[in-house]
Amino acid sequence: MSGRLFVIGLGPGDARLVTPEAQAALDLCTDLFGYGPYVDRVPQRSGRTAHASDNREEVGRARAALALAAEGRVAGVVSGGDPGVFAMASAVFEAIEAGPPEWLALEVTVVPGISAMLAAAARIGAPLGHDFAVVSLSDNLKPWPLVLQRLGAAAGAGFALALYNPVSRARPWQLGTALDHLRNLLPAETPVVFATAITRPDERLEIMTLGDADPARADMRTLVLIGTHETRRIGRGEGLRDWLYAPRAARASA
Amino acid sequence: MSGRLFVIGLGPGDARLVTPEAQAALDLCTDLFGYGPYVDRVPQRSGRTAHASDNREEVGRARAALALAAEGRVAGVVSGGDPGVFAMASAVFEAIEAGPPEWLALEVTVVPGISAMLAAAARIGAPLGHDFAVVSLSDNLKPWPLVLQRLGAAAGAGFALALYNPVSRARPWQLGTALDHLRNLLPAETPVVFATAITRPDERLEIMTLGDADPARADMRTLVLIGTHETRRIGRGEGLRDWLYAPRAARASA
Image (tube, each protein chain N blue to C red):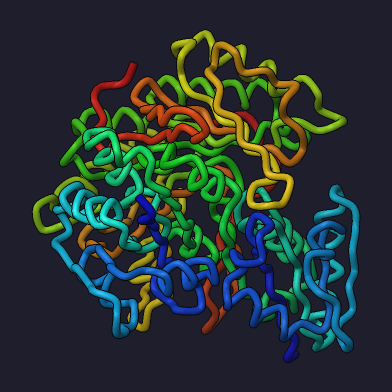
């Protein structure tokens, strides 16, 4: 069996953040699988078939790609951001583990990408410059009390937070409940960033405080960053966006 | 004042993981600052001055770059991995906040990079595919009890861990103590990865368990990944490296 599978991170949206390694992998693929909007980011070319699918079809999509790779084709599964952060890489390995034994011998290459959290942090300064935790607010595959437990453990120990999947049509209340939970643990003036469609033409960056953060300002394309009691905000004056950063030194936790 | 400052992530080492945006920023710079081995990664060219400095000179280096930018030059500060993860971006904003008011008007662009943790995770599968926490084991600027508190809080709540700065000549014992602390909280069979010099010619990837992880196998260039009780290890048989991944579904914490 000579097929290959690439799991490719396309970065947050800006083509200048697609790595040469990701581009080289895309160029090798005979078949591309992924959530429609991600597949659409890759220019079509003759000799390569695009297989777009719905956001919720992760394991089915992984299986289809693996089956083609096992037939000797070069299959690519694309993700926005980094494929290893709440994206397709886990689904691919889940499918391999549950699949036929011959899939174990496939050559699988995960090509990392610029993750949404790091792109968002770069836009605003360095809010993840010290210890931080990364949490998905989706309770599709995780009990909601566990989400709150993790947020509490991380915030209580002084981690900054990057929150993925804050809201969707099917999950409208989770972000508000999460922010309320954090308000019991962190000062109201803790900086919060809603970074939406980061690096894309309709990018929107909003710096707020935990006290006034309005969950209705977030959508499916929003990455939420929560600072700590040590996060610094540098005011720059009229017309210039403030910077947020985590100091390199940390004192005892709040 | 027309100068600019770029804080540029060079990724983990492989040139194919330098983004086009990072390359374009490097091309604009008249002056490059950074820790020697990172500056050395950027091919020299006429018209650009390299200012290499020691690893411990972060804020001094940032100040020097800002001063040149304020004179109208285009200064670049380079970091390995992502500049916003335990790297130069925080030092730059710290220098700005403590510096002359005119630095507030400088155009500062943080160019994200492929972080070591995501490159390491990609090599081994998808061990950071669910909630995870990122901790520096350096106690140069953070009290050691706070490091242990954060490790305990994160591991206790079921986060996978990415550990930066596990060891250096001046800090030989921290990783061993951290692993001992985690052994009190997590099962001995919890997967551990030491990823050293990731994506470089002398890359070394070792999958161990928490029970048998030997801190002497790590050096300054090692990124340590610690799984959870849910991390899956896929055995592939002779001659093929096993895969580790975090399932998309999470049950209650250990």
